[in-house]
Length: 222
Image (cartoon, rainbow, N blue to C red; front, side, top):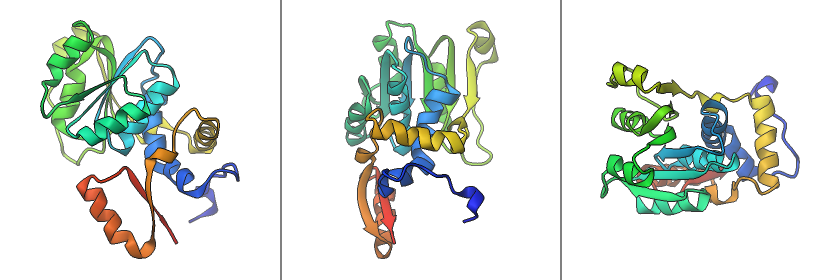
């Protein structure tokens, strides 16, 4: 890679953990901290508990969000979400997401909803879960040409915001070293994100685990 693309971090940062800062960690933590600007008084909903979603949960926890609700269709992913800081979990394969949000927030809705999947229905669900004045952040990678439907009257009447987050609205030169500092000072957990460290020859097995949703992240060493 060109020298300009290399970001220096502390030498005591372990390789496997530091490697994740270059993608899912920065995207997820940044979506909560930089894009949504989560406040300690906020209740945050994170839709999708893959690598980006789990780190959005970490970001919300890092800034002291009052409540963090994680939603996914996998009980394994929801257990991981609790480990990373979710205070409540919803399996929206078995439960009605909108009803559970109403129950958990006493009908108010959430101040911030972070969509970490990239599907029209989950983007719309994140938007629909907002309290008055709330913000929905699209952090998931959306396919080109995808469209969503929202009610503009509700947007203006309830003063809602729907915004995108590209790479966690980050500045890599400063955010990468900061995230490593957070990790080495036990403010975020990178160790648990590394499910496996594999050789390059095992890359196909790594892709198979990725497709099947096994673990969180495999790091390839060569």
